[in-house]
Image (cartoon, rainbow, N blue to C red):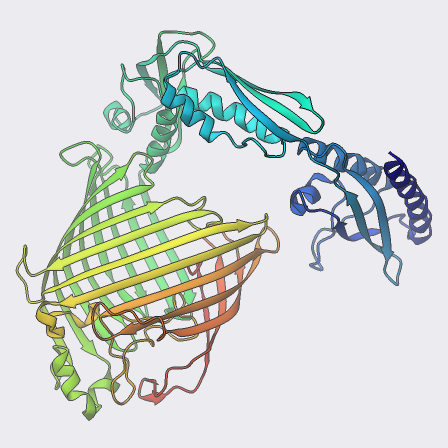
Length: 628
């Protein structure tokens, strides 16, 4: 008690000093800018969350950013907010013991340092569950394991509110549509409490009739087949939410809502209403862009999302850039034969230009996809029939030392061309567990691809290919994200023959989305003269620290590593190329505008691009979207 009394006395003395200093420092307009708020002694809580709880804010460091001014009454209230903030998080004895005021030389800006004594926490001694008699034991166990706290944790009242909602939602996922829950605490001894989780599940109920409204040209059948529940099914709250997401995914509606009718009345069967507002079904999109890899880019697309009715989609897309150009047409049948299977028919004529080769593809694909429940997991099967033509670069064709290698790769040593029919069957698996597809801050993504040619569909080429791409995002505080990516791939020609692999399928690294210290496709096995020829095995990883400086502007530092090897099924972690560098991001509705500078840590000896030896050890990349 004496220590705390002394602390209050010190804080009072500092308050008097602060008032005097600010009075002397005020300008004619009577305001002093807050240039920074610093905490000392904060260990048990997040400084960012504590800062956000205060009414006194830092001024923006950007010259044109918003300025914040010191107000004494507001700051006095903040001292009480700090105590309440800590008390809610299990530290009722916390208090501000001192604050220091640091004025700049012009005496118009102040930097405040707050010293906090957090005190001892209140911990959870036991968790007792009540009222779950009608709930199956396995469901009770799942609910208990899902609680956001456990015995021994510091008592946090915000987590108790979260737990109450979580218990109610979990019971409503187990058919208890009218479930209620309460989370309370009882003091057991000094600095310890017992948490009681009490439930009133109510009756177990089923879904009843479904009412559909708001649709004009889209039939009821199209809407009802997207619902993940049917009359007679056990009530499940998550099924309603996922059904709403599926309706939005059709692109037919600008608004979709799935709700319970008369939720205040406890019916044995829950009636639901689906309300939609239709969107325009025909869209024309035109875009211009620029990136350091592809230079100028022009794209145009026509899209009809209810082609011939029944939510079918038809589209035609054209693109022109220095990297690729061509036309692609798509037809999507959302329900093919059975519920949950989508058929996508694609036809294309596409040209791709790289530093190592040019490729031309003309043909089609039939893609059959199954999206699992919430549309975050996709399993796909593709049947591919394409004419494939590749031509090596002019510098490679004019290099007499490459004749034997071109022949070994299946290329005509005179024309530098390889042409044939590619018939393949491919399988894909994708899962997206991120919070934002365009700019993820937490969660993970995973993708795998398998492709086999020359067996089921006869053709010129015979190979087996496999690749994986794993991404993970971890938030560090409220402004920093630690992002990681690992990619691996192999393409194996039949009988260990590279002549059975299309040159355009060979593996390369380098560019804006992989090893950023090099240009696109500059990392691969080299010819004797230093020309990249591609390989059959690939491995790469990238790590980024992403800092949000404000709502629009961000910065990153990154490390990229990887390599490509000539033999298939090769992985040599001691033979990797490395690049590091900084970058900047500007957030837009279509994704972040990105600028990166990659610096090579171990350059590729004898590398030649367009017939010229490469001496530059860095590359700049400008594009839209995160690197991964």
